[in-house]
Amino acid sequence: MATDGLGLNTEAAPAATVLCVDDEQNILASLKRLFRPQGYKVLTAEGGKEGLEVLAREAVDLIISDMRMPHMSGAEFLGQVAERWPQTVRILLTGYADLQSTVEAVNRGSIYRYVSKPWEDSDLRLAVRHGLERKFLEQERQRLLELTRQQNEELKELNANLEQKVAQRTEELREAMASLERAHANLKSSYVTAVKVFANLLEVREKSMAGHSRRVAEQARALAQKMALQPVEMESVLFAGLLHDIGKIGLPDQLINKPFQSLIAAEREKVMQHPAVGQALLMSMEYLQGAAQLIRSHHERYDGQGYPDKLKGEAIPVGARILAVVNDYDALQCGSLAAMRYSIAQARDFLVENKGKRYDPRVVDAFLSLLGQSGPKPERKPEVVMRSEALQEGMVLARDLVTCVGVLLLSSGYILERKLIDKILQYENAVGYGLTVYVSPRCPARS
Image 1 (tube, helix red, strand yellow):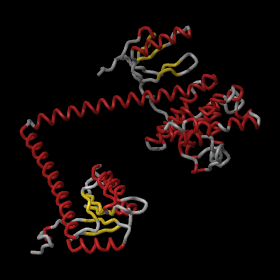
Image 2: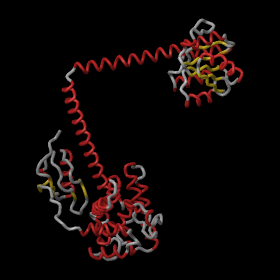
Image 3: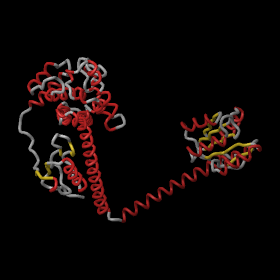
Image 4: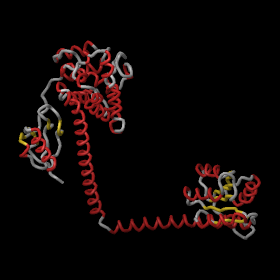
């Protein structure tokens, strides 16, 4: 049986990794010679910074560090080790002159033990051996405690009615998931409503454009679905459609209410800034960054003659290419693009004439196909028309609630609460006329 000078069984010594840190090569060489025969893997570093780098890439069980080193003392180095690798055993080599700072380091709990220099080989080997044994015993104790805890839990589970527990837990998870889904749906509904309200701010000033943003958003989303865009892309198209003109909110009324083709050069230059302004207004809203990029690019042209970035062809995001077609189709009929209002047939002809120039031909073809689709219209859900004073808590809006000039107040699907009904009544008193409200005939069960 192999033993060291103290009679310890070196064959039984646990395999361990020891890191020696000192700025003197002869000290590091001495420590290597001392510990490699013990079966340890010995790593070295010539200072605290290098030691931290070693620890970041190597699993180390025990550290021996000199106290006096340039740039970072041994106590400072081991203090950082204690914070980042608390399970690593820490031993400090120190001279008599460093005794006070060493005692303070030990008291702070950063160091397991200190050894005076010059050291006795047997003393240092013993300190390392005891430190490692303590570490491995603590690891084993924790493993056994965890194993015991797990076994006790398993025994408790076996003694319980497993079938009943599974059924109970399944029901709890189902209820929790349903609650989360309802909360998410309500949050998303509120978010969409808020976006729609923002979109109406500009349309309040531009009477001829009432409902324009909602029409563009709904048709653009339907077109995105027809072109097989991903759900997240379709959502960005929807929000971009609602907010595509938000960058115009700072423009004077005479520019907003004047058809684009009737603007002089200086006026056009101001109006043409609105896509970039719209993107900037949304920069702080992380959820709308996809839509913001489409807003910036929805006036780019397929032939590269658009604005603000002169993008061309496939370089234009597909959602922006979709918006360009749908937006112009509606704007032509509203009279905001050309001096005259186009009929539906004229607006379609305009799209066809500008395929490959203003618009992506594939998008135009898909949109015309979407407009020309025939077949039974989707059946409208049952609804009841009532005055605001008859509303009751828990009713669900069957249609968007809008003012007489088309300003959106609440989106369809909104569940009415008492406070919201009171606000509707207050609004009617303020404007001097009543609103027509469409609600679903049945109220949902309230949880």
